[in-house]
Length: 212
Length: 212
DNA sequence: CCCGCCAGGAATGTCGACAATCTTGTTGAC
DNA sequence: GTCAACAAGATTGTCGACATTCCTGGCGGG
Image (cartoon, rainbow over all chains, first blue to last red; front, side, top):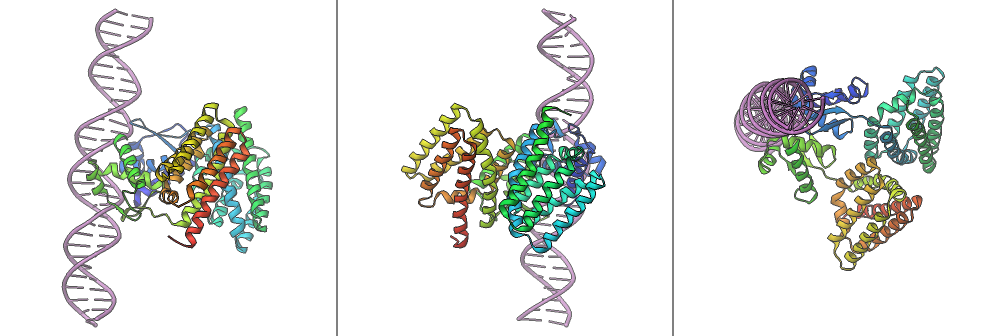
C-alpha cells in the first residue's frame, strides 16, 4: 500500500485545495493517467476517500466530489461541537506546561494575522490550533472522528474565514478556549469550545436562510 | 460494486459474530476462495472495514482483526456518550407519536427479556433501540459515526450483556431515556443518555482495573 | 409530434498474472 | 553455541485485459 497511499493523500489534498469542485466527476482512467499509476491505486484511493465522506460513489456510475449542503455542514458542525468539547476538556486535564505556552503562542500569531487582515494565515492557524488540541487531549477516537468531519466541511470552513468580522469574533472564542485549557478547567474549556462551534453554526444557519 | 459490497457485509458480520477472533489474520487468497470471489473484491472489503476500524492493515504484512483494548473501548464509549446525547436530544425534538409507542413497545419487550433471563435477546433489543433512536433523530452525521463506533466495540459490548445484574441496571437507564424522549424534553433525554453510557464506562473501567 | 425500443459508447466491476516486499528457516563462519 | 547473511516461501501491491452495467443518441412506430 505504498503508492496507493500517496495517491490517496494527493487526491485528498487536491480536493481540499479546490482543484476539483463539488460535483466534478472523478474518472478512474483519467486520474490513473494523470498520476501515472494503475487504476487499482486510484480505486483504493477513491474507496478510502469515500468512507472519509469526501467522495460519493454510485454503483456503476463512478465517483464524484461530494457536495455538502448547508444543512449537512450544520450537522457536521453539531457533531464536532460535542466531540471537540470532549477534546477540550481532556486537553485541559492533560496538557503540559509546554503545551500551555505553545497554545498561547498560537493565539499571539492569530492576533497578528487578524490585525494584518491575513484571512488565509488565520485560517491555517485556526486549523493548527484545533489539531494541536486534539493531540494534547490524548483522545485518539474523538480526534480521528473530528479530523474526518473537518475535512468534509472544509469547503464551507474556508468561506467562513472570508466573512468580514468573522475572524475577530472567532479569535475571541479561541482565546476563551485556551484560557480555560491553560487554567486546567475542564468544564469551562468544554463550554468555551461549545460556544465557539455554536457560533459557527449560527453563521451557517443564517447562511442557509439567505443563501450566498 | 455489487459483489464486493455483499462481501464487505458478509465479512463484517463474520467478524462481529465472532467467526474471527481479534488478531486473526485475514488472508486475501483464503477469503477469496472461501467466498468464491476474486482478490479484488476481498481487497476492497478489507479497505472498507479498515476505515471502519474493524481490521488493521500493515504495509505488505496483511490484514488482521483489530484488537480493541479496554482503554480504547472506554474512549469509544466516551465518544458515543456525547454523540448519542445529541441524538437523544434530537429524537426528543423530532419523534412522532408512532415513534413514541414504538419505543414503549421496545421497552416492554426488554422487560420481558430481562425477567426471562434472555441475555441474547436483550442485547439485540438494546441495539435495536439505539438504532431506532438514531433514525428518529434525523441526524445523519452523528448516526453514522455512532453506528461505526458501535461496531468497533461490539466485542466488549457483547460481554457486557452477560454480566450478572447488568441488564437490570441497563433497562432502568433505557426507561429513563425513553420517558424523556416521549416527553419531548431534549436536555433530560441527553442527560439520561449520558448517564446510561457513563454507567457503561464505569463497568469497563472496573473491568480494566481488574481484568477478566 | 411524441414515445418506446435498440444499438453504440463509456465507465466501472471483476479477474488472473506478475512484481515487490516481508517473514522464516537454513547454512555457514567465527 | 551464537550470530549474521542468504535463500525459499508466502503474501501483498500493481498492472493490464475482459465482462458487465449504465447512459446516450438515433431510429421506427403510433
